[in-house]
Length: 191
Image (cartoon, rainbow, N blue to C red; front, top):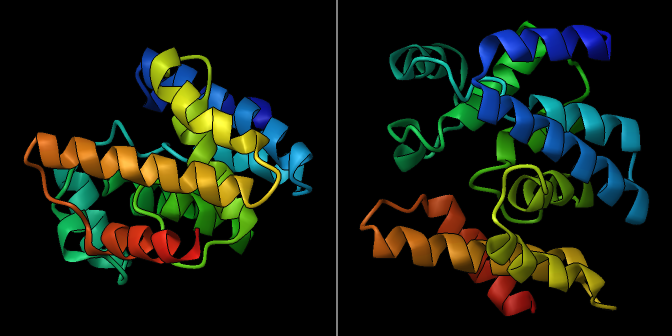
């Protein structure tokens, strides 16, 4: 699907802030892909579509997930903040015609992650946290600074993002997906 058609559909399906955020993630993902030797065009598309189901009715999201998505973490499927990622991957495939598994996987993983993510998946995950259109400067700077590290910059930025997310979830007494805890533990050992 041509980018202008994707943008028009997103404008219809998302609220104004989520639409701006999606463009910001696409731009940041493209910049990061260039910097870390990944496909820039695919990163841009993944960034645009990563939240394509974010404004969908929660009950409809749960219905789609139940009928079409088999790999949901228990805490992910009943959580409005996380269910949009697998549903967005499904919508990207069904509505937008995306067949590239790398793009679909990056969309699927942009909230809870998984162990042993590819650099492309990490780029979309991080771009979602540090895009400059809607993310607060104080938040994104804490993650961005790790991208300048000489060794394992994507891993270090990912780890900081997980650390901040888990801390925030604990403070707000919200459930933490098991996969997120596993990724955090794996990265803690690695770094």
